[in-house]
Image (cartoon, rainbow over all chains, first blue to last red; front, side, top):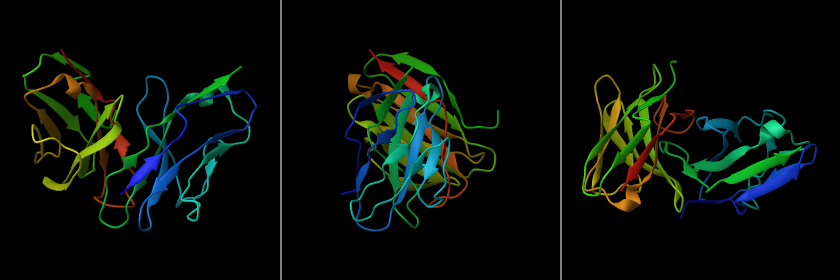
Length: 110
Length: 114
């Protein structure tokens, strides 16, 4: 079964501390992995996709096929990073829909 | 704003009723996806349309139906509403139908069933 697991509902850190939001997936094949972010009162927006291997707003994520993980990391958290973060996967080929984890709320304290 | 738009923002109705949610995709996008976000189930895929045709179905109840019109806007119809249908309903659009196309989300419609 296709599944995305985000084990932490809430993650609270202090400004300047490192952040790691965990994501594990279950999929037989080669999925695309994404991180979406939802800031307060804003719509869901794409933060990262594994195929682009880029860093956005200081965040990076590496796909580990052996551990079936796609953890999101940032070395120094900022208060403006406070938001809901959703990990999602999409099967390859013609399958377009996303399968989301339940999300992790990141709170960065001053 | 040329992004995905959804109407209405909020909808309050009673059990047993029928409602229609509307979504207009970004200009040029041919695919529309509907997702339901509830506290217990999280974000779940309901259905996808591509250029007017149903493309994929997810966890969509038989009481729910959708369509995509020639102008590419989409409507999600929810009937015989139950308390458990209370949720945020998101629409997303993308250029293509499958992998490789980024999905852009609308602001959502919050449905409350009393």
